[in-house]
Image (cartoon, rainbow, N blue to C red):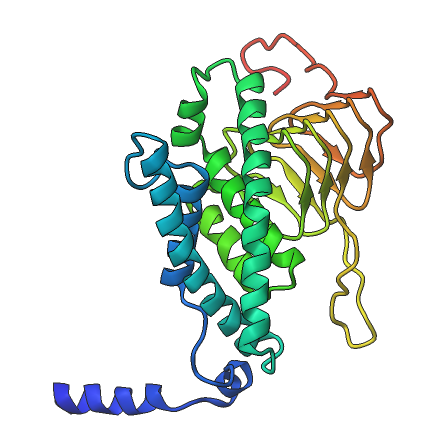
Length: 296
């Protein structure tokens, strides 16, 4: 079989729709575009942080013009992607008018998203002595990339938009190594130092002024299954009250509550609720003297 025949044969095979593929394939053909969603995030960054992202902003007039141009493009792309998401992944009968209304409702939340993001920036500056300025945090810290995406995604999820929120948070996950489900509820003045390997599950609830370090997991301890053997989506992740700090590589699992003003040290495995003002640390290492390998 020559090259042409091999190519033709496999094109024909791969063009067919398998039984499994047919079960997963959405109706209507068109689906949300990763490229368009990435552009939406880029536009929102330029709108909320003009001058830091996108074109230079020299004065009030240029700022107003730049934000206006970005907003117009954002509205157009956002309503299209919301429409495609409903058509493909939820209610195919959601009309264009309803999708447009949801897009506008989201745009109404942008000022509040911006305000809360600036509390995250402030929290980062207060918890990391290496910070030299707010600008450094915006430009350099993975916290901002992941929280921009998370707070946008959470707002869309609250409005009932399917799949787009997960796409948006996974974009930040792939760039930062920080995995936050859009369903998690995270308060103001939230900071993640370093960040790589942090996991925050869907039903986690985090209060205000909470700080996490790299490798922290807020996960589920176990799953509940229905009569068909499928996992049930019920609250299964931790609640962290205000002013909690969790140091690196600690795992907090299950629907437990970490009381306010608690410090959880590094490398802790925690599956029971903790009272406010607690300090959870490992026991000190046991020191011993080894002679020529004796005792190892």
